[in-house]
Amino acid sequence: MKILLISNMYPSKKDKTYGTFVKMFKESIEHNADDIIFDCCFIRGRSNNFMVKAYKYIIFYFTIIYKTLFFKYDFVYNHQITHSAPALRICRCFRKFKLVMNIHGGDIVTINRTSERLLSLAFPLLINSDLIVVPSDYFKNIVLNKVPGISLKQLFVSASGGVDKNVFTCLNSHVMSTGTIVYVSRIDAGKGWDVLVDAIGELKLSGEILGKRVLFVGYGGQTELLNKKIKEFNLSDCCCYLGPKTHQELNELYNQSDVMIFPTMLYESLGLVGIEAMACGGPVIGSNIGCLPEYIKDGITGFLFESGNSHELAERITYFYKLTDKQRNKMKIQAVKTAHQYDSDEISRMLISKMKEI
Image (cartoon, rainbow, N blue to C red; front, side, top):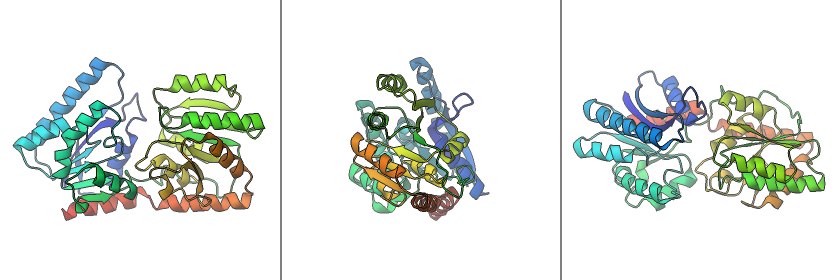
């Protein structure tokens, strides 16, 4: 089976954390199917320069059109559906081909006019696609409501490539308290990093954060604002921004942390970072929003709090650290068990099987 794999996000040598979910998806499919060969159209690494970004997209679109029209593939598999929609619409005018559209969240829950226009271009592709892959049952319903004209039989739930158990694994069988709290996500509006800073500020005033450290990991447009707020709240002694980390580095970090905080205020389609933390034995304290309650079971694999409520988050952190070692160890075991349900090999095999049915 020959597949043209398309994504506007893929790691580069300089930007190793960009689009890693696509890289892991590709590697997992290749690992679980000897008869699948990928040909790829990627934009590798981020660029803040408009001219460089425009040049990359021109090459990206030209490559998609050239390969789709002049080569034969069993499937064209498209990640991040909106950004490649213009090129694929052109291709569909001249040639029929089997199309798989993999929706991740932000590509369909639009936040500005540009993304809304790109989504409107993607609608005919979605309606006429052979398979639409969505990351969760929660998001399947979002897509059904957002895109009139698609049918339930077109949709297939596959958890964004899943969690690679060879990368994210629990190294400690018992709870070893380190006093470390970790945030792993983009440092952008809506991701809730500011809610966590507010909660830590409250805990410092009450003395509950004494002897603990909070590590912020990720990239985004608000890193300067994060560092500024840490200084303004006089939290430099307990809060630190580490920047983006590779998956191998994240595995070490999760294993050295007591708990992962997922304070998003967005309706996440899955939130794979939370499941990766669980695979390393880390309970997750997350917002009661989007897909998060599907795997964060309150009091079992972590705790939920009202999205945007920093006071409630502070209470959950305090309550977590009052748990006995036995209670925390039980939560750790349940977190790992839950993460195993998202094993990348099993998820890849199910997706491969589904595609072969088409």
